[in-house]
Length: 198
Ligand code: IMP
Image 1 (tube, rainbow, N blue to C red):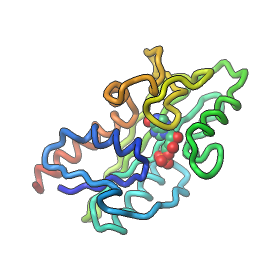
Image 2 (cartoon, helix red, strand yellow; image 1 turned 135 degrees about the vertical axis):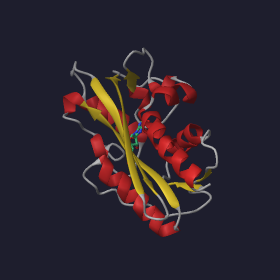
Image 3 (cartoon, helix red, strand yellow; image 1 turned 30 degrees about the vertical axis):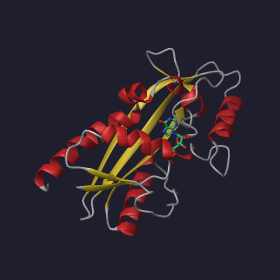
């Protein structure tokens, strides 16, 4: 089965390739193999945006597509930046500026609880659709720490840990991440599809 990863984000592509590497009979393609144009994410929820991306890229390419929409929800900010995580500090997307902006907004706030949320949409070439989700709870640091991962990783310490996601090797982040949890659910679906239609 051929599956196109419906994201232009290099950090996500790296993580998704590693997470899906052990699904037998699955050939993973990304935007460097099959170019597609950017999809505007104007949905109100992670689910809307994930489906929007998977449907649009599948329509553009005629392929089965896996797309995700993810973001950071900070409790003390009423769930912001949420679906606006990528462009929190404006256009174009800039991780360092987003991190500075978030830390500014959290100055003096002692409740640092936050969570990463993700929805993954799988849209098959024949029109079948599957949606799965995942979440990772933790807390926001006072300053960025670490150089790994992407996005808000230098600001996020998962519950039960004392290091940020950006301080962990990718394999360690991928053992616990929101993306991992949702991908595990998607893998169940993919394994079934591949076994029915090898
Ligand atoms: P999306 O491309 O619309 O899903 O935007 C996701 C945004 O949320 C990214 O630009 C990051 O800022 C943030 N994000 C999502 N997943 C992660 C993660 O695993 N680590 C850090 N930031 C993430």
